Length: 356
Picture: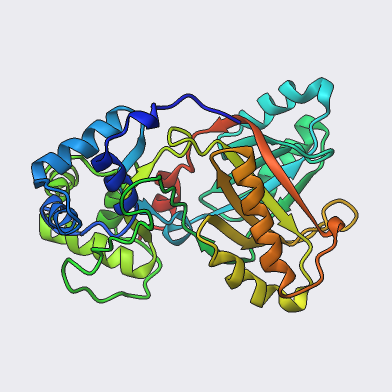
């Protein structure tokens, strides 16, 4: 599957360094570009805070980045989301896709290579009980059975896409900078926290004072915004803060969802081992569906070519084989062939439902 993007061959060394260095671990301080630029200077790049800001802004404008800012963990904000598979007959595929996509609760929908389950979508809802209702509606409207595959255990969600060039391991971590905060075990959001989540979900302003700009937008004090984003990072409500690349623009066009029938007694060992592979971006345990779907383990890989993707999948298989005897029929790889819908997960509704 391909998507038009920027000409990555034209990216300067500094651009590549920025993309590799700051996909996580960006400082959460009032003027974050100053320590970030200092970290690059320590790596041999003569760059000021203003120059770094301008670079990130231009990368964003060119489509190399999807956004800059905090990656919100929707699961910790409220509501629920689940992965769903279904069969769309070839002669009705477009009609089925249109019907599925018409549901506002369907956030992402992909066509994938599989002889039967060729449509895969995510349902995101504010009320967990709504998932079953949405699937019933889709089954009634399409005449096709749906297979709910909720996440049973998460081993990794860390979609980092590195480029050839400087800082190839992406190991600049400035997350230790920022205010001292104390995590809480409170699940519900306050009204002001809800406003903050909604304001930052699409990214931070690319300015010298992004948190002050957010504070102005929601009527809060800048120190409170900085402290709350840092606390959310500690609590898991924010997965990381940094640049978020458009992986298609970076050439990562091969999107392989590998699925495995892992013996239940070794899943707990296999999961962390596969999650430790640097090119695995998502890694979960999900339920099987007897007679239709025998796989209980999902590992998502991305590659810049079919050959690279194949090599990475083979690495996953080799890692699996350290824990159990993997036969050819015990796994499959489902590549995306088309994006059918991609609208986001309507975080506003999920956050609002979890506000007290």
